[in-house]
Image 1: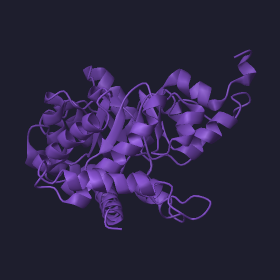
Image 2: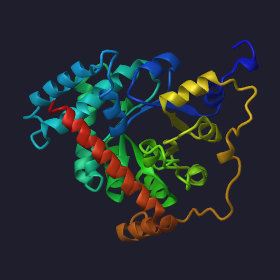
Image 3: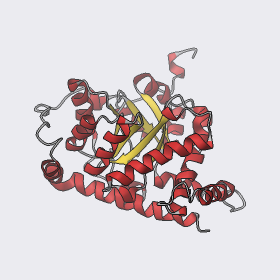
Image 4: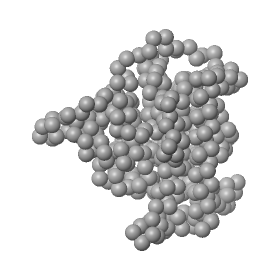
Length: 335
């Protein structure tokens, strides 16, 4: 770069944080990559898979057909998994593999959200996703698969088991320190604080008036104090102003339309905030969560009472939305 004035906000963000792409569409990673990781979920997958071309036909019609064929051929390998559910995992993995050439790090795939309160089924889903990656692309290093799991008690116990097997995990749909403390305790590779609750992406009239900036900063400071391996990866962002205020997060995942805007916005002049979330701490931040992280009843009560119930309400909302998108994805396997 010949001069500082030619820097974009994306360049500045990359100088402060590892930048990930939050998509299953290859266009922006191809244009603006390489990125570090690529994150995804059922909502991202569903809306990518139904995307039409100029003639109104589905761009990924062949990929869907191939995924259904693969899933149908594996009924004896995975007898306890329905064909549509397995096909959804295959669809997401196939999309993720298209983006791998534009990544340096992990491909993140989210487990079936209907298992958010079932540890064993979540573990099985995570292991199966890794196995399918290996089968679809034997040359791909399966150590670069990260399994995204909703941050319920059961979900994070599944993270503990998968991490023990050498499979990286991300505890997602995270809204409070009770969740963050448990994620570090079980050894998650990442957490994804949702800065905005998930609803904002599906209801244009809705605004989250309790954005999780303070929580995100507190979680990163907490991890640094306790020397946790777990890294903070904020998600669910709605503007480049929100993104830039989070510069300095260990990682940050950004949707394609915001990545494009960051890349086209000059860094000088930029009158917005850069890294403000991590510049100052909040007096009285607690580091004492030892009494709850091994006690399911104590943790559940602390989580329920966190933020007067707002954190639990937000994860319930997110799981419901993701379950609806899972249903939509499974419907594609029947077409």
